[in-house]
Length: 455
Image 1 (cartoon, one colour):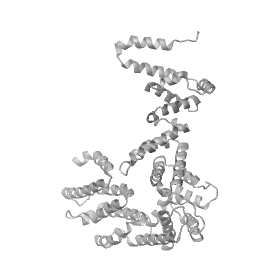
Image 2: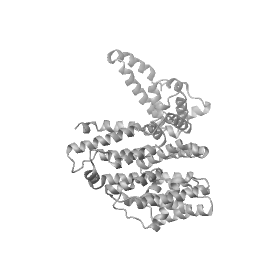
Image 3: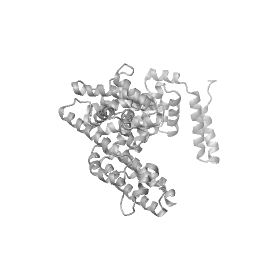
């Protein structure tokens, strides 16, 4: 008995002696001190050995779980000893008791498969009522659980991929969540190669296996530029499959944002970026065909009706490329309105038109507003943005961003009164955007800008 320290008795004595002096706060201090002592003296090998003999949690673990301070102790132990079998079982038992929300911030929780699946299921259940205005807030829990480690990100993407395969056209919600996860990884971890490698693996393609589609996609992602040779390789594979009737490579590779956006930028970038030169028609044709294929086709075999729609979209993309003027005058914009209203019925065309509108409005320090704005009417560009937001909910964030450009602008030739009139008109457009189920981002934006607005 020489090793007995009597910690329990000493703790109770200290608590009873100091409680009347320091009040209830002493219990928290003592709890933290005992927790640190447990963490320091815990031996995972001994604990696992005893647990493996009975495959039952010790009674003291059962007694600790109802109390938050001791649950936190178990969490801290699991962070320090992620490979412990006994602690893994304890975490599972805690999750089964309904404390999953506490475990979201644990870096060790996703390492335990059974716990990770429970966390993932709860996150998805919490996201079921999400809409366009709050989806990013609802995604925070999922991102915390999934994007902390490469392994959990891969498992989650694998699960979502399997669900999409089973549900087919009914998997739009899961597909959206999957896309948002990938976008988060790309924006926050700056590791596009990880995202595309996982996408390739899920598509059944081997990274570094000499596949021309894989090599071309990887090159575009690494360079952030769609070189002619890479695009030609992709075109030969996808277009060749359509012509021959053979199975095409997975369209998900082409739809990857890090692959598709550079292709779009090469063809249409001259409309909103002075550093991008307009492509020769014979080169642009392959780029445009790939954009149309990515926007329209799926992994299902292409029938004749789909081929006709694909050709029609190719024609429309060419019309947009040739029909939109670079930094047009007001008369040219009015002349193009009928065609623009026709084009923006198609999501991919609406995105191109939106980026063009944003450049026209902001070019050369908002020259468009300085030249054409009058307080008697709403600028036609703002009306077109409103129409795009109405037709395509997924483009609302880009439309809102374009509105914010105008609201925050300081047009050099404007008097304060004229600048205020422009801002009032843009606020009215933003209010209409809020009515289209996009209220929360609008409220957050103006809450952050309230001091600037008061000035």
